[in-house]
Length: 308
Length: 264
Image (cartoon, rainbow over the protein chains, first blue to last red):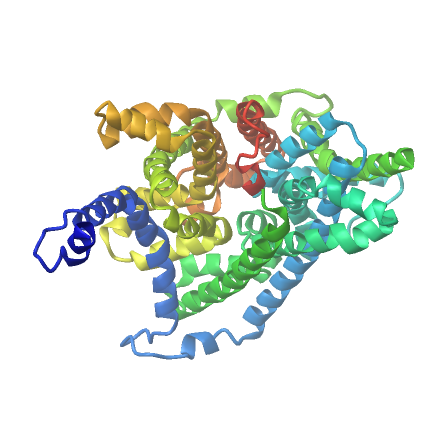
């Protein structure tokens, strides 16, 4: 009885409770530990992105709201670059995704020795990082006008040039695939690995064939991972600048992809409309936001089954 | 049945590997052709003796080390607190550290230049260098955070912290002398990947007009024929060394689920 009164009436009786203030104090101390990280993110990521967005919708002269910058994107050159970039990204993400999926299946459940899996995973780690300038050099040495493969095919009676050029649309696709396929492999192998043996056994016990297992068990479980990763590959291709610049930057392909248009804004913005650069960058941010949205949504779904 | 399946796998593997190894082989052969009529390492001698090579290489090397140091200082305490107490922050921190993986480098450079236009950060050489390192530190987050986080989950953070606290250690001492040595391997994997990225980065360095290795490589293409292939081989070797470092470090961990899944 006495206890009950004590607890219930303590605040009324004016007994100072020493507990509540401490967690708050400690929480703020803990927050202090993560504060540098958040300040950094704010200064180097959030603020630059935020300023692109606000400047896209601000008039250059007086900073009032305007849609002029967005409207100024509506030129054949810019629309063309967005369309071409989308095409390249779609082709390389779907093709890279498909080839990467086949390769991932081959090294996980395809009955190959374990060292091959390890080797391919290591190589994928290297190849997916091997982008940009050196990658373009590699393909120039292979499929350029003087390239080794071009030369080899010539002696075999096949003349690639002038019908084919590495420095154009399909050249970009071929080169992009070099980092797209390994990225797909790297993300999908863990997903395929976490398909449980019991699921296959259950399917077999119920009389399911290999086709049934894939059609009704494995693919539905892997599907979100596949779609999410393909979305990531799409964004990856859409935002690639170094590879595109090194391959088609100087020449006729200067306006081919959006990243190169943004690059051009660095040098010409004093002459041209500075709002245009912001609008171009804003367009890319919108595309990337969609990519992240699809990726995180798919990841959440796939985690239902593949959570480790 | 099993036999036929593995035959298919071998065939797929062979075709795909052809696509991956022919360019590497061609690059290597091309790089040996600098002297007419004979194969040799002339192109390699040429690039290694060029002062631009060593200058830009050292510049990128220093920048990479600085990037790793700052990234560690920012990420380790954050990941530690997120694991120990601020678990509600985990989704937010995970999301924030994933963002740099998706935002294109050209947008990062553009945003930084425009956001800090006409401030000390864009109007002085040191300022632009701060922007460069800041951008690289951002690029390192997806790898560094996941590496450190994996390392922290492999040890018992709470027990270690309480043990250190009961011995009277301060928070700094706990982080530096207890937590850090225990996750050193994991941190090192993040550092290797960060190093590979910073050494080969082209977009941000060139847009910020920095004398880094990436822009140097791009510039050789305009002047030389065989040297670019030699540089490509050197660059591939460097990347390969870094990833090999990661592989060796993670092999003895459980399963090696460190951040290789996020390598670009």
